[in-house]
Image (cartoon, rainbow, N blue to C red; front, side, top):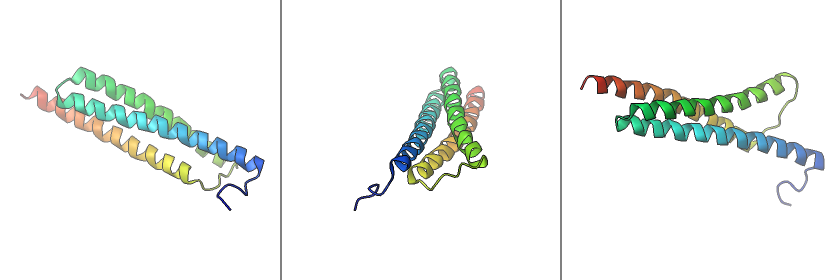
Length: 119
């Protein structure tokens, strides 16, 4: 028997909702991380205006991801227990690593700016 064959229609609908939330979280997180690394690339080229613009866009996307994560936490706090989902675990991991990347890249850009001023 294949995975998923034993799911009821109700479970399949729920699974679809969890998958949708997970994919939205992955998409927003991934976009944020991509923009943050593009910002770092711009800073390495001393294009600090572009770096700031891209980092600002990265922060908008990570805020979207954070809102999705908060929805999940509020739902669970309200008694809507989510069953384990590998996709959702992956999405949350993606979110956390993206959030860390944005924070670290923001600091690296500050260092590039400071060193650029000292040239």
